[in-house]
Amino acid sequence: MSPTSSNAESPDRELFVRLLMKHDRAIRAYLRALLPTVNDVDEVMQEVSVIAWRKFDQLDDPRNFCRWACVIARYEVLMHRRRKARDRFVLGQEVEQLIADEGVEELSIREEQLDALENCLDRLPPERRQLTLKIYSADASMKTIAASLGKSPEAIYKMISRIRQKLLECVEQRIAGMDL
Amino acid sequence: MMNPDDIALIEKYLDGTLSPDESTQLESLLRESAEARAKLRSLATIDFGLQTIAEGDPVSNQLPSPDIENTRSQFPLMLVMAAMVVLLIGVATLMPRGDDGPETIARISRLAGPIHWTGAGGRVSNDLVLGAELPGGTIEGLSPGSWVELEFLDGSTVILKGDSRLIFSDFGQKQLHLIEGSISADVNPQPSEKPMLIHTRSATLKVLGTQFNVTTDIASTALDVNEGKVNILRLSDGQNVDVPAQHRIVAASDQAMNLKPIPDSVLHWNSKLDLRPAETFGKWAPKTETKNASLGLVPYVHTNRSGERIPIFVGSILVSGGNDHPVILQSDTNIVVRGRVNSPFGLAFGVIVRDAKGGFGGSFLKGIPPTDFQADGTFELAFSASELILDSDLEGLKDELLPNPLNALVETFWCASIDNPDGFQIHEVEFIPAQTERDESSQVFP
Image (cartoon, rainbow over all chains, first blue to last red; front, side, top):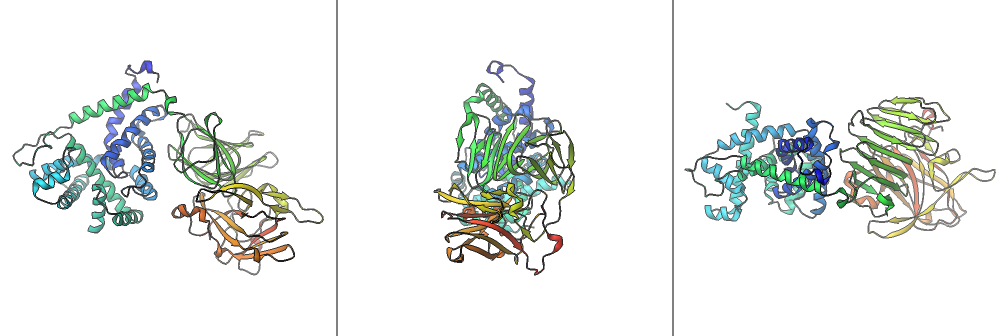
């Protein structure tokens, strides 16, 4: 695309933006299982977005956008891993490949889980819900939250771990239609 | 059902609180358990989802209070996302592609041995590394032990094996030119109007999605299809054939294009050097009235695990390929090498095997000390296939390769030495199964 057309709203650009925004959550959820932190996900997702736009004319069927973008995402995860190879939180290549290959087949499950999550979060006791969001907000540090509650960071990690598992249980029940 | 300790490891990974020991435990757990991997993906989704909701929640920065009403909206977050996407598109659009150099179409996902790369503008590199991103160009294996796997953006992989040369490009359609040697490919479904094309001197292959092996020399192209279907077009007369799974075909101007099932493997093999010069790498000499056909070693520069570049003398013979039955080794197979040498020296004999998908399964060797050679110049050296061990230069890839060469298809027999092989010639190599009588149905004929 030439610089002179950058200000024009071409149908390609509009379609790309719509597709990327539609599938952004599923792609990021796919990346989260492959990368140690949400910051890593943001970093890789930026690269994925740029490369996906550059290669958008190679996508034959917009219905395959999510899967296609995940292939690009997988590639970028590999590049990201090279830069962080010494980090103990980076999964080994063999394991990462297994998770990535299986994850591409579960993209629709990711969407369903994310759709069900808000409802399940609402079902938490209000103070638990707010504490969870506080922990996940960008401005909160674990040390600060733990100090404000008079607990150790380890205790807070354990608590959030139990909440995540509880939410997953709720999400799975909703998807299975067992939730009334 | 996963036990709580295993779930705790996954949770710690998501929180970034794993100790080094726990990291090793998690790695092992995820490698072995599909259930654990599924749990990781689901919990990672919950983790990511909570992050998204928290970023859009106007009350998340306040202290916890049961009186605060639940009000949240992801609308502000969506606006931020939309703005970011538009900005990224703008940046990507304004930056000419040339600013970042030629566009990457594949990367190196595995490699071993000396590899030569000629990229855009004719720039030559001998220092390719794992993960290197490549635009279109020419990639070349410089020795029988050379091996490189290219992974395209759609996940399709092509493995270049041994002394082979491949030109590859992707301008909306993957096109490979196999100038000489062998590749095996595992190709994901391609658009029907833009199949992957593989060109050799004698044929063009059209690939929509399959797993196969191609070997070519100056006069012929041999194709084995393991999965799916490949169409092959013989260039000399335009005849084309669809080759289905578990079948093979040879495209050459001087023989009929007959489709044949891939034959069953055999245990006995003889090199028959006088009949197969094209299937050797090294200094081949024909049979004469006074001398056997022979194969001598040729030099090349090898880079070892430590990065040192050392001269190595090497020769090899293709074992399973073309019209031959696939050959496998068993633990009680004897490998016998006959030849002559002017003065004894240390060397290694080895085999390269394929894994179940037709890719590189490993290179395994047996060291032979100078004392094993007889005094009169001729030699007959024998050892069991079970004595072959993984080439130490492949130690870093151990987890991705076969543990041993037994019961795997043997692609190549090779010989290598760091000493200058004074008058060294191989006359014959034979794989002899433990049976004292050769199984007549296992004879390999050219």
